[in-house]
Length: 352
Image 1 (cartoon, rainbow, N blue to C red):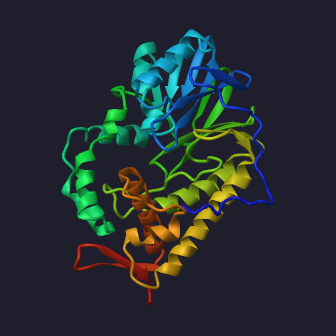
Image 2 (cartoon, helix red, strand yellow):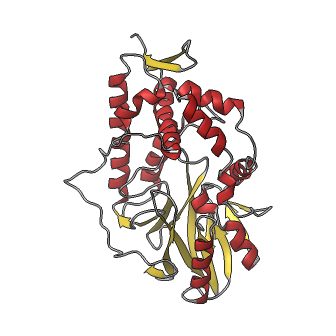
C-alpha cells in the first residue's frame, strides 16, 4: 500500500545494530539469538530466532526450503548453535516461516509447535502441488478484472506453494491463544493474531520484555492482508485491525520487538498506531474512487505507491489486498458489488 504510516515527528528505536550474516547468529538478549536467512523474493531475507532451552535450542521459524537455507542451518549447528534443537516453533504457515520445519524436526527428532489452523491450512495448500488450477480460482481472478493472459499465467504457476516447503511433519504440538510455554526457564505467552494468516502465533515474555512478532508487526513495511479464492467473501482486514488493537491491550509498549523482517525495534504501540493509520488512509482513498464503478484491479492506483505490473506474484498480492479492502467496506454496508456482463465484479459506494 501507499506508505502513509511513517510519522516524521516520532521514531522507532532500532538498537540492535547490523543484522547477522547468513550462517551466523547475533545475541540480542541473554540466550536469545537473531538469525537471518536469504529469500529469493523482492523481500530478500527473513529473521529467525533461537532461544537457549536447557542444553539445546528452541527455534522460532525456519526459512524457506532450499539448499542455501539448509547450508546456513548446518553452519549454525556447527558454530554458534551447537547442541540439540528441543522444538521448532512456527509463527505461521507461509513458506519462509515453515519451509524447513520438516527438515529440522526430522534432523533432531523433535516436535513442531504451531497453531492448529496454520498447520492444517499449510497441509491443504501443499496438497495442491501438481494439481490443475480449480475453476473457482479462475472465476475469482476473472471477477477481479484479470486479463485472460494473466489467468493463463496463473494456471501454469498454480500449485507452487508446496515446492517451497520440505515434507511436513505428520503431527504437531498445538499452540493456542493465551497458552504459556516454558523456554529456558522463562514463560512465553502465546498471542494470536489474524488477517495476515489464519491463526498467527506471536510469543511474548513480559519478564524479559521481549516480543517475537513474526509478520504481525514489522517496522518499515505493512504485512500483506489478502482475500484468497478459497474464501472470496472473507474479511481479513477487519480481523487484522482487530488484532492490532488486541496487541495494544495485551503487550506492553516497552518490549523489544523481534520481527520476521527488517530490524528489531522498540516502540511497539507507535508502530501499531502507524499501521492502523495507514489502513484508515487506504480505505479513505478507496472510498474516493468508488463514486464510480470499479473492478478490484482498477483500485490499485488508490491503494499502492508503486505501479502493479504483470509480475504474477505482485499481481496476486495486490489483488488479494485490494479485495481485502473492498470486502471490509462491503461488510460494513458502505459498498455494493454487482456482476457485470464481462464477468467482472464492479464495486461502488452505496447510494451512488
